[in-house]
Amino acid sequence: MDQPKGIVQEEKQHIMFKLKKTLYGLKQFPRAWYHSINSFFINKGFCRIQADHLLYVKQMGGYW
Image (cartoon, rainbow, N blue to C red; front, side, top):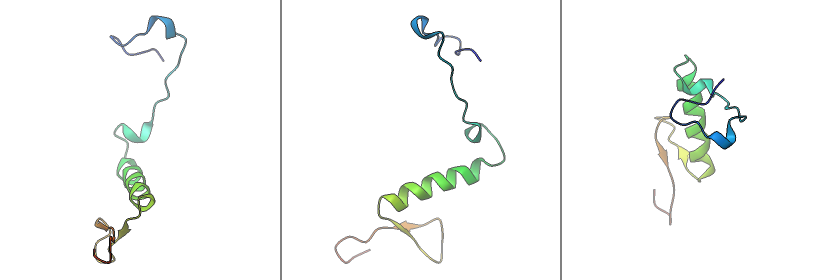
């Protein structure tokens, strides 16, 4: 694998790049994206609504 044209860094030509396949049009992309965004929201203190798993809320000061 070579560095992309126009972005070649002369001093770092020996460095290889890792391709994240789940981000480049594979069938598993929606699952990988949902897992990433779900982990982000859970780590920030949000929780999913039981009726709609795509809706996250965070309780602040006794209010939703």
